[in-house]
Length: 102
Image (cartoon, rainbow, N blue to C red):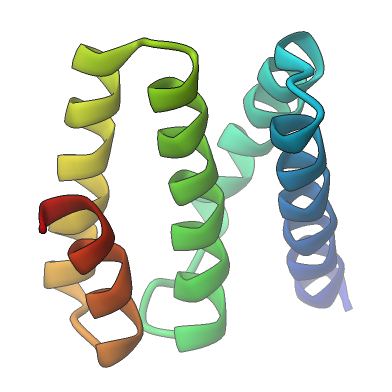
C-alpha cells in the first residue's frame, strides 16, 4: 500500500541520514533531509510507529545542527521536538529528552 511505502521511505531516509552524519557528508545530509520534510505532512502522530520514525529523523537533524556548530538552531529544533514528544507523550521519548536536557 502507499502508506507502507511512505513508512519504508522514511525508514530508508533515516538510515541514510545516519550514514551521512557519520561520514560528515553535510551536503548529502541536507539534500536528504530537505527531501524528507514534505513527507512529514502525511504522518499520523497517533500511530507510535510513525511518531517514532518522525522523532528519529528530527533527532538526526538536531545532531547534525549541533555537530555543524549551528547551536541556536539546534536548541530551537531540539525544543520543538521535545514539544512534539510531550504532545504525544510516551516513554520512548524520555531517552531523547534525557540526552539533551541533563
